[in-house]
Image (cartoon, rainbow, N blue to C red):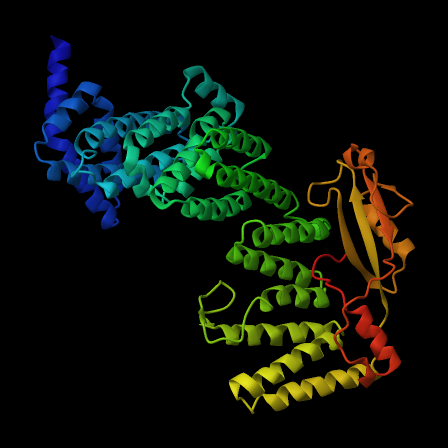
Length: 548
């Protein structure tokens, strides 16, 4: 009898107060009312009283889909606000916050019933409402107060004993809702790619295993609709790069990602299996490079390794997946590293990697974070001037002259800009004078091979050409290299090492002066004295990669 009376009283409260309280609280939030916290606490207290039967009865009382839709928008928006702004309870009130999340978890799961019953049928599907709901699931799962990995042992034990990893509970529910959408999944591609990706990057193996398969569903869905999965591909690459740089993801994630998606790719339709397998392989290789990059991201002692990792990434974006925007992003990162190390020639050569991609055209290029929206020729011109300045500081005047000549030709033939021609000609004349009058120390170049599985992946079984310091000879260079890799053993023979060395769990280096380092001399050296021609040869290296 008492239970029936209590149930009835709560039912009356629910019908009469919930929507009023929701609207009042949202109004208080909009007006920055100081009583927001008290209203949100009342809202949570009311939700705590509701059972599954109360929710069912509450949904039944909405006879009009439009009224139900409006209420769900308000209800989900308020829950989202409480999760994102949990100031209603102090941060050290762990148990209270845990109880609040239990209440919100049940409320979120109960909201799926009216969504499935009323807004999934043909003619009544509401993509905005569903998007809000799915994103709310993600917001709940990824909220800081549920990330047990950062908790002390006592809190972890409390959650473990209670079986309260709510991330896994709602993660399973999220997969259920996603599967229920069926063909409507296409409405959320690519918008939800980054949301699901953020969930999978939480360091919880069970959660990752449940969610990672969604990416294959997205690829399959887009493949059916458009004949390719370019949108999913673009978004995955973009967000993986961002989130891993935000210190999310680890080696276990890379392995799970490859295992789960590769298995699904092997069993997909033959018409797109090869593309799917290739993409999963590329993403795995990207994850490996991003994790390498993050491992050496901080610390002055890692500057050379950062350069190597950055160069690996920019080559990956250019050669493997043809993402020019990402390529340019890492060109600028590598440029910044060289500027920090005061490697002026390398800073200029790195910017030239981007400049040589551009044409002297009037096409309008969008802003890239470094340059505003502008004509393509204007961006190329500004880059050239910046590169010339770096070459001047690095005493690489031969390379500066080449760019001055190209600018002069552009001003003559295309831009019809006679005002700028004298400026570039004066720069050329200044560079010729410096070449003849100023002393420049010679620099050696060194071939370095890194062999053996004990090396970090970004240099493992790879070969590089390094530019040494001023007057540095091979003995001093070798000593510096070995101080960075103290476990390495020097090989005395050039040429490809045997397979046993490549597969060994040790480190082996080959260090030598290239026998024919200079191949492509574009200057007309007849105009220069003998010593100037010598420096023109020395500078004819692609030195944008590394300086040790």
